[in-house]
Image (cartoon, rainbow, N blue to C red; front, side, top):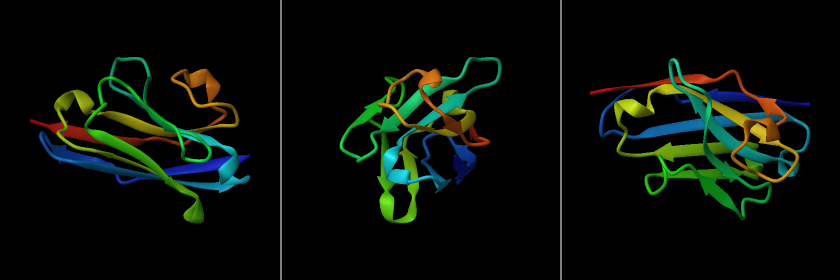
Length: 123
């Protein structure tokens, strides 16, 4: 079992920056690839970014590519997501997820999920 707890959400002005953290506990953090997903009101959940178990590989959704970074720190069992140049379209509940298999964009690939954290971008 892996428990995931997100932090760092809140309200951001358009054009601003976002920093999210996800703290993992339970089984060995280094065995899991980690990802961020988000779900906007009235829309399906979508993949945002992922980092492999060893941190050597990352993937990004086209919508955040070039303005975001996903990273992980094994020493404190955490994964981070930073994004700049936010727009109202980035408003969503952001979820941290963990997979015991290879990272990918499909939500079904992930075994564990956090509760989610709200991010609201105002214009």
